[in-house]
Image 1 (tube, rainbow, N blue to C red):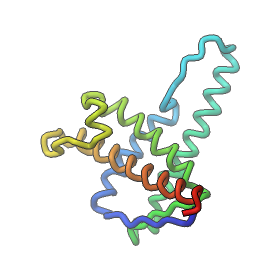
Image 2: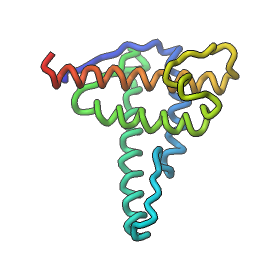
Image 3: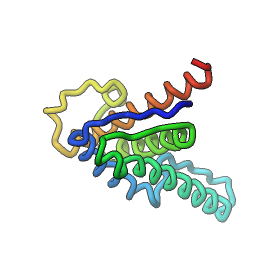
Image 4: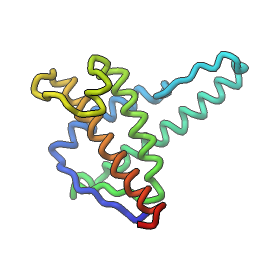
Length: 153
């Protein structure tokens, strides 16, 4: 996978970063996709969850790390084979957290299709929805380029 640089509009993306940071705080101690495994030994289960949380938090930190000084000076974030999969996982975790905490009132079809009158939503819900769509777009972009590199396109 070659390096992909994406230029983003700082005034549009900056407010979404606040939403991502808020979700990342919730993800520090909670798995984005918890799994009940009652048949596991409690100590093994706790160690397993701790390991998953550690990886999830590392992934989310890498996502937030995209929005560094270069982003705030040039509006550019970059993906390559070193961070692509990590960023896709982090986007998924944040999107799941957004869905669980802020977007429960919106049906799945609306979330995945993006068909909503933004001006009709309260501001907090609108920001959460925009962040959800933004992260979905990042995931799609990365996945598209990962597929192209695997196919040799």
